[in-house]
Each structure stands twice: as structure tokens, then as C-alpha cells.
Length: 165
Image 1 (cartoon, helix red, strand yellow):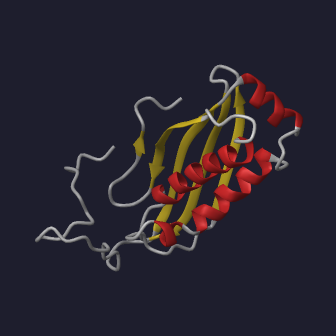
Image 2 (cartoon, rainbow, N blue to C red):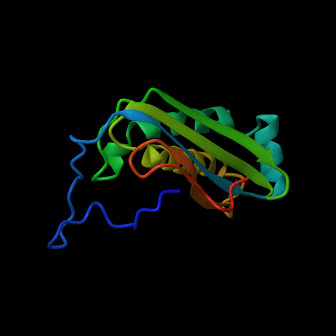
């Protein structure tokens, strides 16, 4: 982690929201990874595993939704820059301890601004898609734990969440 004092970069001197000017920043390789999970009844997890959810392939659909969401982040988050992402991955794995599904997303580019919001958006939408596809079986599912795990590149340097596995 960098030794810089954290600040709110999207707030102007008089308190108004604004888009950060990145024109003078250097282009660097920037990578961010985020995670989240959907906790559900064991029976719901079994339905998903067996491919018996009413709406079809829950994991495949959620993976695709997460990738698509990362690409649309500036349409959803008002002050995000449109980015030319070079890679987005979304991994969804069973976690019997929840029970449920863990979602991990990584976004990458070479550019002037970071991709944390793209990774977080991918995780969020993938989790929401899991909920949507399985809600007929389990409306009590919980989406939780959405957080940035790590990021690299850029002026602020590297970050790794203290509780990251």
C-alpha cells in the first residue's frame, strides 16, 4: 500500500461532485480483483449444481452478466471513466461452508485510471444474476461480502485487502 493520505478524489474544492481529470496520468497496466458471495439454502445450491434451476444455467449466465457489467460500469456509476478493458474474468465457485456461491472478478487494462469499479461491478451483477436465476427456489438468499481484494498499477500503488485469502 502507498503511504499517501487518502482523500475523496471526486469532490471539488466547494464540495461538488466531478469527474477526475486523468489526462496527465501515466498509462500503466492496472489490474483489480474483487469478490462477493451469495448464501443460499443447501437445496438451492444442489439445484444449481444439477442444472435444475427454472431459468437454466445459473453459473454460466451469471459469469456472462458479470463480464458484460464490467464493460458497462460507466453507464451505471456516474463518475467512472469509459475504459477500454483488455481482460475481464469472472469465476464462480461452490462454497459448502456458506452454503452458496463465491464470485471473484478480475479486470485489467493499460490506461490512465484504475479498474476497481469494473471488478466490483462485475461481482455485484454476477451475484444479482445468481439471485435472479434462483429466486424461484429461494427468496431468502443473501448477497454479501462484496469487496476489493487487490489492485495494482497507477500512482497510488498496490493494495491488498488485509483479510484476502
